[in-house]
Length: 357
Ligand code: NAI
Ligand code: MG
Image 1: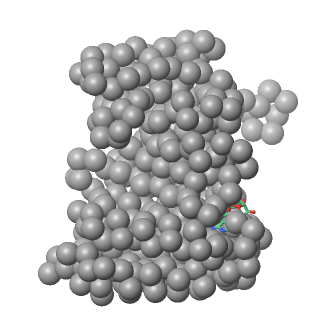
Image 2: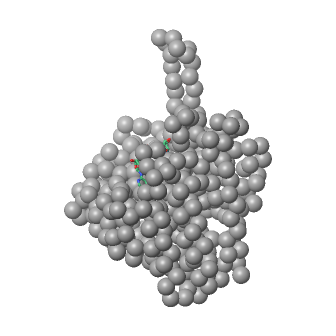
Image 3: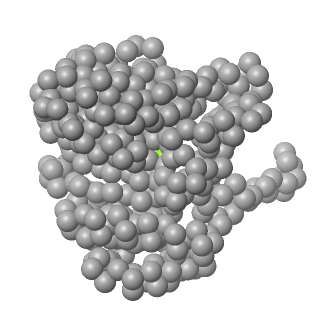
């Protein structure tokens, strides 16, 4: 029996609700003769914890997390704490501290889900986001605070090593997909240093992947292409900021933020990787029991894939698709079901599914 150690951090808002739902379906999969078991430890780190203790991650916390095979993360953000404090207090120390430089964000219109696009069924993308540097490197400062001459800088940092490894990761992933097509997204007309270097390194790496078709697009132009010609895109690689924005657009185009998953990967596996829905704490629906758990289920499937549980990962995606197709939808998808209804439907499907192994 294979054992995987999972650190669960529900954190804020609907985070704990969707993580609890995710753990329910993971348990159903493990119980289903999956040949594996999950050893889950819950970490209470959240904004409430911060307000009580003065920190999100206690002394030695990251060291403890290192003992796990994967991190299953909800969302962080509270109306009582400024967003830059919560983000830099919990999610970024894990993502950056564990060198989870490859952020993988698939987007697809699931069966039964309505895209705002008429040609939404053409969406089948993976956005690869550089997750360790760039615009979110934390390099900047403030001076002359409160004075008329106050200044704030936010310096985007691009390193050759950082850019090369994300391009290589994107090519490797693109190579495994039927279309084998990778689009480079930058803004190298207006930003002529870091972005031009991105472009140059992309084409250097491309020489090692002659089987992958490439093209390039400026980040503003690619938004129109995502809307007007979704089929013309397959895998996209972009910087931390650009891909952050593009993946929210991709989520909306594929039906709802409530279905979009992401994996923060340390591909070398020196550290655990982190799996989370891309949405935030969703204050407006917290505690109402209506959060869509599909993003978290899809995320859980990516986590199983990463842990080598490919059969269970596929069963979970089949279950998710069967349930979205049968219109058991939460309100964000136009339905009346709640989190528990969707979770139960997915667990039932898993329970009735053919044996995995
Ligand atoms: P949000 O993703 O929390 O909510 C945006 C809208 O989408 C809301 O109307 C919400 O109800 C809806 N929504 C999100 N997830 C949903 C789900 N699973 N089911 C149904 N509807 C869903 O983004 P917002 O409002 O910009 O941010 C709220 C807080 O979350 C902020 O503090 C922000 O910093 C934080 N945040 C954290 C993230 C993370 O932990 N990775 C990512 C994005 C935001
Ligand atoms: Mg975002």
